[in-house]
Amino acid sequence: MRERLLSLFFFFCVALVSAQAPYVFQHAFNGDAEVGSKFGWSLAASTDWVAVGLPFSGPGNLENGAVAIYATADLAAGVYAPVQVVHENIGPVNDQKFGATLACSNTLLAVSNCSKRATETYCNDAAEWVSLFQWNGTTWQELQQLQRPPWATGGTYGRALAVSNEVLAVGGTRSFNGTVTRDVVYLYTFQNGGFTSLPTDSVDGSPYNTSAADDLGHALALDGNTLLVGSAGDGELGAGAGAVFIYDKDLGGNDQWGLVRKLLASNGRAEDRFGYDVGVNGTRAVVGAPGREQNGMTAGMAYVFDRDHGFSGNWGQVDSLAPLVPEEGRVFGATVAISGDRVAIGAPPPPLGDNGIAEVFAPDAGGWTRVQRIDPYAEGHVNSENRAANCIAFSGNSLLIGTPWASITHPPGDPTGGVLRYTQDVVGINETARGSLRVWPVPFSEVLHVELAAGGGQGPLVVEVTDVLGRVVRTERISASGNVLTLARAAMTTGYYQVHVSNVHGDVVSGPHRVIAQ
Image (tube, rainbow, N blue to C red; front, side, top):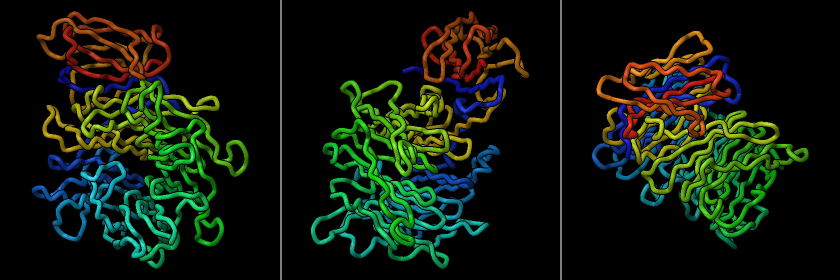
């Protein structure tokens, strides 16, 4: 294993950021969480807020859980202290794992103690409530707790959540309708300063013949009057192939949610788990299928759908997104996020402590193209066994990546978990406080100079230039620290690059460093 000694990012650009510009690492934060709290297990973001779950936090081994809430304006200003940390108010009860699943709007935060990404070991299977918090202009106050409806017959209430300022959707519950037990998503309406204590509506995939094995409500996404319900176990295309149900509010009656369409993958087959995670933004949706096989490997895939694609009122598949490097068990598509013309797909491997990656895509010539591949471990921001991309979220011009098993201190210490913040709008040179590489000049010129000043004793150094997909495009050698490597932009095609510096033994001595030639 190569030792990460220093970590530094540089971003060099000669033009305004374009739609194809990559996201650049800015900061890793963990809210001063205690060891083992798994800060970054869950994420939820709105225009004004970012909520981070740390469900394993608590005194001793209680694992009560908590949620740290950040203002997006603070993050943009480089302030990484939470505005508030909220806890469950029922007292120190062991194994609650409050914060395992989150959803938020600009004024409401929904929190449960059950997570769709967890096995029974990491989920309180007795979950029977969802806690609601409301922003009053000064602080987040607990608004109410919603109990699992008395007629529900089982499941894990709150395994998936979605919220707007008017509607709350809660997945993970089952109900017996007199003939068969089905998975149900309950919908609550915000009225008179709070949500209705009992659901005002529910959806269960009818008129399709769903059952408890279909795992309907495994994932939820809500934007305006559109609700996506993932059903990762749906068997229409084979056992466990998966499906997604799209509902619109007021379709079929006032405040009622009517089924618009059942989505299936164009190439779906058994055990794809299509619908394991879902996202929606306006008229565009993204669906993860982490069980999809490629070349005999369970590598995963994701799909993009647009409303009115194909014909008016339709939700048509625009493209399928595969990982750059298919790997067995990589589960690409286990987490997804969408914002406008950007889609991020996470691949947190099933071994809960392994290294995760995320890939970013954007529309291009009628389809979608890969913009970059983010590997936080290879970039030197976290230790190995970090489970990066256990959750991902867009927040304004930022991409947030949860790494609940990571140690983000330097040198690495005990793992607390963390969240990595990347932004797209950096122009010029951007650097962290660590490292010893200089890039000049500013303003821009036709030649980029890189000077390594890592200290004596390094000996010959290898400078490796890679593109944003991790492919090596140039390798140079500096004889000793303090020497200058000159990279002429004319010798590099338009694009975005990383600079890695290592010694002859392959130990990374400073890097990577992000550079643009454009």
